[in-house]
Structures are given as C-alpha cells and as structure tokens.
Image 1 (cartoon, rainbow, N blue to C red):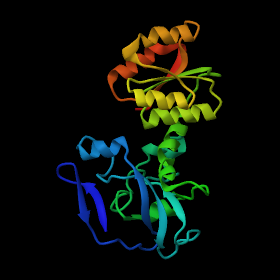
Image 2: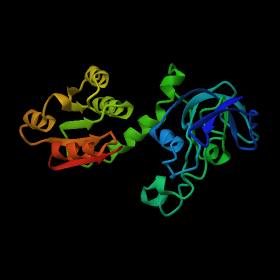
Image 3: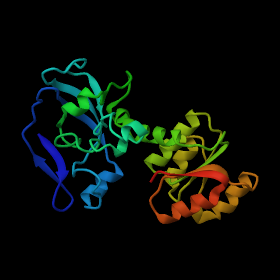
Image 4: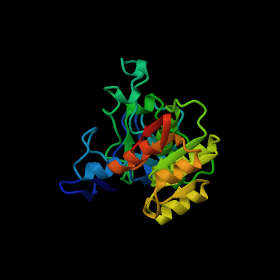
Length: 260
C-alpha cells in the first residue's frame, strides 16, 4: 500500500506492507483525510507536541477488526480519533483531557495519509471510533475532528449572553467557527481576512466581512457595535497581528478566544 509519512526533508510517499489488526485493533481503509496545520508543522520539523505521525483528520470504512472488537462490521463508515485520554488521571478529572499523559501516547499506524491504517486498542476500547450520520460523504466526515475542536472552543466562551462576534482569519477553521456560531444562534458575526475568496465564503455563511487592506477594521467594527466592540473575538490565524487586532476589536469585559 502507499502511505505518506514524515521524511528527512518534508514528506515521503512510500510503499508499505498493509498492516494487520491485532487483538482489540481495527484496520481502516482510508477514503479521505484532511491536512491540519500541525501536519504541516511536523513536516517542517517545527511541531514536537506528539509523535511524528501525520494525518489525523481521517475518514474511512472498517476493513477488518481484531479479536475482541465488538460493535463494528466490515465496510461500515467510521471516523476514528487519533488521540484518546485515559479519563482517570489528575488532568482528566480536572477537565483537562488533552493534558493527560496518555493522550498523545497513541496514534494511527502508520498515519491517516495511508491507504490502510491501524487504530490501536487503547483508542478502540475507549470509544474513539465514531460512526458518522447516514448521508455524509467521506470528505464531509473527515471534517469531524476540526469541527469538534471548534465546538470545544466555543464551549469555553464565558462572556454572558454575547450578541456580537468577530472571527479574525477565515481559513478552514475560521469558516467553521462562523458556521457553528451561526448554528448556535449568533446573529452578528464579523469575519476578517485579506483573501477575497475566504471573505466571499464567510459572507455566504452569513457573516459581515471586512478586509483590513481596504479600511480600518477596528474603527469599522466599533461603529457596527455602538462603539463598544464585539463581545467575543476569535483568533483563527497565526500571525501576531491577528491577536493584536482581536484585542482591539473586543469590548471592555469581553473575551478573546485564542484558537490558532
């Protein structure tokens, strides 16, 4: 089988023998896999937070199950999670599951960018394989993980009854924020980016859009919000100026959600 792995200089496309599932494991046939920013950082040698395995936004079908695996059948569409916490340690019991020492210990083998990959027993037995709703395409299903990250971030918003939001950076994550915020009932969402295609997409999803190269976005946002600023600003872009802009856009006592 073909697989894309981290090489000495960027990525390598290699031919590997298809893995076989051991007890408690699941072999997945990959149908789609998203490219995350952390994948790019791993390929560039800049990300050290977990093992050098790329491809975690994967969707596919069950190819084979190992001994002892129940509730899954061959050919069934699934979305597996690449990391699962233990649920019992100091961090898990204090609502910090991603700080769990076991969280990054396990991953797909050899990674989600391969024709077939193994989901380890640790993940399987802790419910880390999800079944997407009927009708979703593999490409839609592989957006499960980034969408879940956005949902988790939104749950951390503590501002009381926010009426206005700004999303700084309208890449895949920023656009997902706009869609999920709209789904939760937000009526005033301001999307900020310099890319015309991204601005057009955000506008289609119901956001008011601003391009910093065409005017003073802070002044414009203030005028749109009664000269208070937005209740919540989401930083969904990496450049330092995105954070600076988000802070300036936010009202006194508001909240800046640092996602990127």
